[in-house]
Length: 162
Image (cartoon, rainbow, N blue to C red; front, side, top):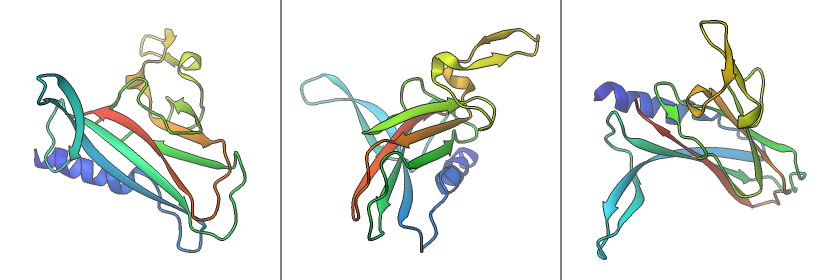
């Protein structure tokens, strides 16, 4: 258990590179554990809680918040966030998103990018196949709108601990 907790803490620190103090856009990362609970009506629902203790099989939600701390608007389409899928986790299909973003993935450490239906993997047997979510190594969000001075937004994705 200690190893998993350490890996998650490391992933939070290394998941995104914090912008330098003089940069107008600052990034912060957070991670929460996603739990299924029964609510007061007897229905199952999912909620996010602090990821203080995590175990194999747990689902985690990463959120990257980006804020314009500069005095000028960031041009539309010029803000791109790239994040590795944390080590020792598996990306969960269709979980990456963010308002006003286009999302692409990499299966080769960030060398090439594409939509899920465009990604191909060559297996150990030299046979090609369509990539699956668990093959993704990196996620890239392109923020379409302009980001005005003082504005912020966020992107997110979920993973499972194997």
